[in-house]
Image 1 (cartoon, rainbow, N blue to C red):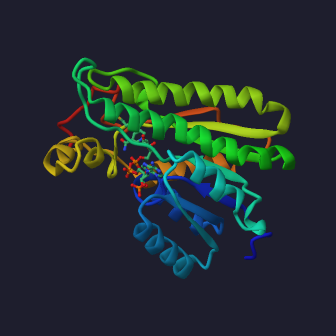
Image 2 (tube, protein in one colour):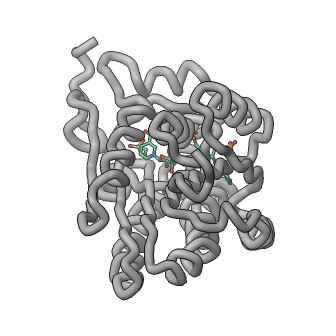
Length: 258
Ligand code: NDP
Ligand code: 8X3
């Protein structure tokens, strides 16, 4: 399918987990993909695989969403035929550490705020004008159960995801005149690289988060995002909260199911 015939999806944080799963789901459906993350080798490998397996078109944008200049330069210089972004999945994000507020590491706080809030804002600001011009588009922000509830030691991460919740509502109101759909997809515990990143490579601690029950996987969330995207254009899913069956709240699990 040529670029003008297919829809274009821009996925941030596509090198692993939920973002990578979205890339695979949307590729299977024939969408053209713009893939972003910092790890070039992962994006190169995924792009090759998707082109070979599904015959789709892929544009790689390797940059850090925290870098305002990179975000605006890279998006401004997207080749002409790729500029018509139909769907933006604001997925790049992370938690760093799990500490009481008086013991938290300020660098961790900055990384979470800069990525989850400011990065999402920069990307959105760079992409939205094209959607406004075309009076068409869909923004899917990845929130979290941590944006619906606050849990012990989650302080700053929870605050960033509450911000994503609030920014999504703001986008929905302010982009209403331009026929732009805005959805918030909130996962519960999903087994990705998330906990390895949060616990800074402590594999054992990361694995313990998903022990004793069946967590979500990236593809569970990707299927929900694809569902939102493929509804008729007059239908918008405002807010979706997806949990493992064995998780009732941010911190209440039935850990005797596996
Ligand atoms: P992963 O760690 O597997 O994926 C995170 C992705 O974000 C990676 O592709 C990473 O790529 C990218 N990323 C991180 N920082 C940056 C940056 N500064 N610039 C560009 N890309 C960046 O975790 P998940 O897939 O689980 O996380 C995806 C989203 O889902 C996040 O927003 C997370 O908060 C949210 N979420 C996750 C849940 C979970 O339980 N896993 C639950 C609820 C929400 P790279 O390192 O190559 O840059
Ligand atoms: C990730 C889910 O509960 O670990 O957003 O914060 S949680």
